[in-house]
Length: 260
Image 1 (cartoon, one colour):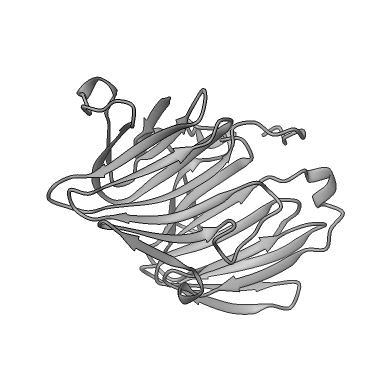
Image 2 (cartoon, one colour; image 1 turned 120 degrees about the horizontal axis):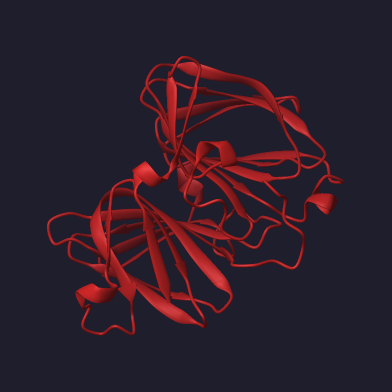
């Protein structure tokens, strides 16, 4: 197992307007100098924060499956399909952009969201009609046990299903507690630390020795890969909880991927 951690300084940067919206990009475009260019079909990941109310004007997308996941605040959406919607904290907007659609987003001051792009087989995706779906926080199933709360956002246990092979969860680990995730052979796990501090290590390392430990803190982006089915342990520091948004995707796919 390999666990790589990238600090906010190693991530791409972006902004809209005159800086009304600022972004850290765990996975960005080439000119944004993100240390991670992609993780399998996970093509793009931006953490946007609105310092003042601002609308990103209508702009086009095609092919990609795009989720906007609201960490706090409200995101407004309008598009050329005729949708005019708002979604608030914990909710999500999903566009399967297909043959092409224009959309605009409005972020009031204080709003934070992730926008994440997944890449299906683009030559097939662009032949499909574009779609838009919206989900409120209450629509996502949540399970709690042993100080860990898992909100299922994408995947078989969640209301959002994509063409891209992907699962996504929002995980909160209570102070001093841990969450163990079994990562199947051929898959990678990518996670952003939304808040808190903690550590990640391979489960086989029973004593949690410092040599293989990966310290984590708010804003860090970690990518876990394996050479077989293995488990990774995420543990919160004794004095504070740890919140992660984690995505599982294949490390490689059988279709051609877009060259950035």
